[in-house]
Amino acid sequence: MAKKKLRHVNRRLSDEERARHARIRATAIKDFPPKAGTDRKPSPPGIPARIRQAREAQGLTWYALAQRAGIPNQATIRDIEQGRDVKLSNLRSVAAALGLELELVEVS
Image (cartoon, rainbow, N blue to C red; front, side, top):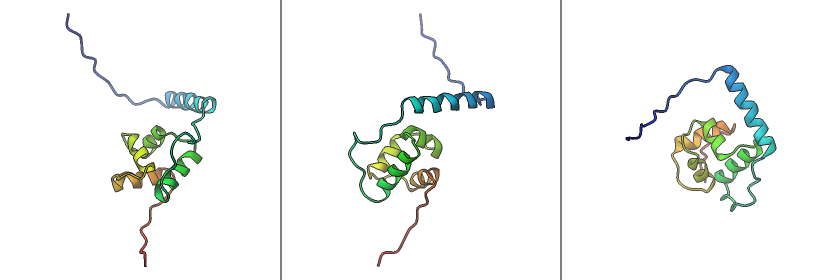
């Protein structure tokens, strides 16, 4: 017998469902807070360290920040915090999601 392929269907959540999910998420974060980052190597100084510091201060996981910034892959957040090359547009989205602003300055 051939297996039937399931089709994923997206639908918008109602306000009631969205509120219920937010309550569940808040309770889960309260019961199981994100680790403070002591088990990972420190971020390089500068932008990577500032992004990580802001994310942890707001109690966000890589996944939650990626969702907030509209980035489909949480690995991008990890790459930013580890000082790897990423698209400037992704870096700007992450900074904006954290309430930060990127600024170019001329070095003398």
